[in-house]
Every structure is written in structure tokens, then in C-alpha cells.
Length: 42
Image 1 (cartoon, rainbow, N blue to C red):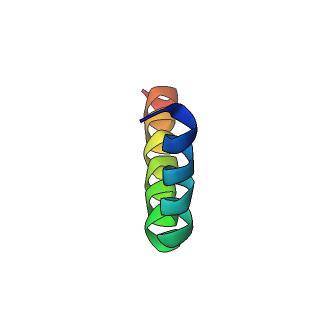
Image 2: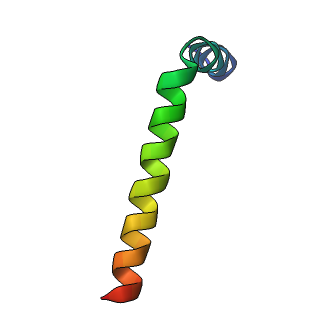
Image 3: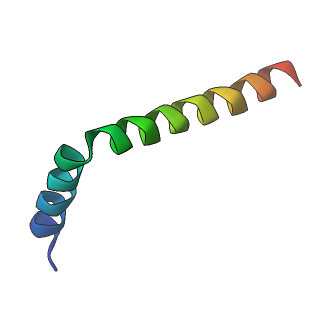
């Protein structure tokens, strides 16, 4: 499997599973924000 094929498959999966992708991105954003906050406070 080459790189262009992998990118095409992943973009298709993102289009099909919009809610799952949005929730995953939201979770990552909240997690990174929590880590940054903990480092800033502590």
C-alpha cells in the first residue's frame, strides 16, 4: 500500500464517519488542553 492510496482511504473514512471523527478530535483537543493546564498550574 503506497502513500497516496493510504491518504485516499483515510480521507474517505473521515468523510463517512464525520461524527466519530469530530468526537475524536474533540477528545484530543480536551486532552491536550488539560495537559497544558496541568503543566501551567503545577
